Length: 302
Image (tube, rainbow, N blue to C red; front, side, top):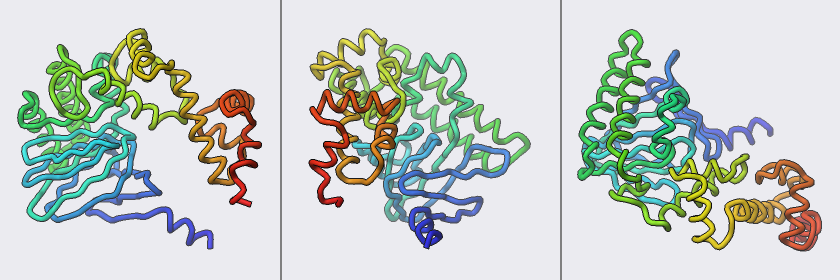
């Protein structure tokens, strides 16, 4: 029975040089030995449901188009264009008859840990859609096709050579965007305040269960801590820390009513550092303890 339950939550798909392992919506990307780059080519209709993984995912349509949904944003990536999806962003994709594409996956830790990459942190953490109007598109595609060539040839130290081209790609994108802000939907020009807030809310939705704060969110959207704090208060009418607390309490309410998880586990799962803090914040927000809330609204669980 236990083995059957395990098989229901984990699936494994075979590819010519490895597996695609999926547990729920979390994908565990597998790589060839001594490497952390994968390249897949496909010219057959296919679709993948919403999932996320620790790798950066880059789609390079060769013919036709590939449809992507990244969180709440949709892209129709045409032949000649590029879409870069950062780690942990939930996404789905589909490709119809008559289309073909290369898909590149790579683990970003070493690349993103380079000190001057912090200067273009928004590039690393937000999806980037390079349409035909983007000045960097042609250079980026040329570098990515060199990654594909290195992967297919598998010459000595090919994995490092792939990373050298990926690093050049981010340098090109960073230099091209040095004097303008990034728009996560792929449109050019500076983002409006509401668009910046959309990015901030997406970051909170993805990371509220982690130990995040104002500094993390401001770095994610690419603005100073002070500016972002003022903008957040002006747009939402509340501080970042209060908004985050409300988000965590709201998620805790769902778990209290719809699951049998112990209260202490719920506290940790929604981002509170201790049960004492959770109880205090929850009581201050809902005028009752988490256990009392469950008793009131969770009768159907009995």
